Image (cartoon, one colour):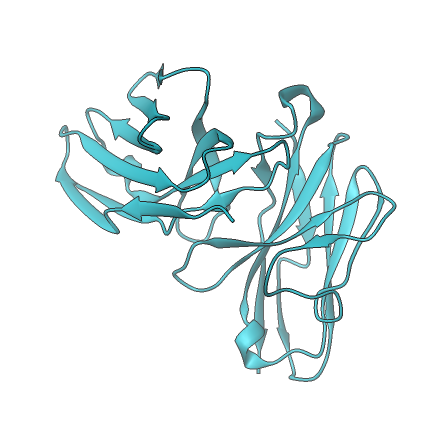
Length: 116
Length: 112
């Protein structure tokens, strides 16, 4: 399985500011994704991080609010822009190794964000 | 788009009993169905998955069944132990997008 790390593990931010979360995978993966998990809730897909091109966003999520980069096959960033308290959540990245058709996903440890 | 419904939202069993969690999905093109276990404060961990070309898969005390006609799949845990206590999520994926759509989650409590 792929080993996935995220930085920072947690942060407390002021409203109106932005935070960039980094996701690093130890081996090349075909697909990387970003999810949000609000307290006590399930995981909601934010977007698919595409290598070398613009991310593909799910309904309800827009690039201006959640810009995503993926410069290579093992690294991606998610920025939470112009934060409000409603953005307080856990943000998780996931990666899918190519050997299993890009479906089996492994998750990073998550970034716990609190916006004051 | 795909929608995944999961039941029950909470489940309490005695140690040694079996636990069953059920999910239904809406998109008939879905062909991959993983189950994740999430302990408090930790990342989701894949525990078992099944693809649409099989009806059942088993790994020790854990099994998953899939009924493509009815569009539902279930997780079965036998001989439950206190360390099985966690939140379990089902998910569905299809059309080679790799995107996972998650159910709402089931909080399983195994009482010693």
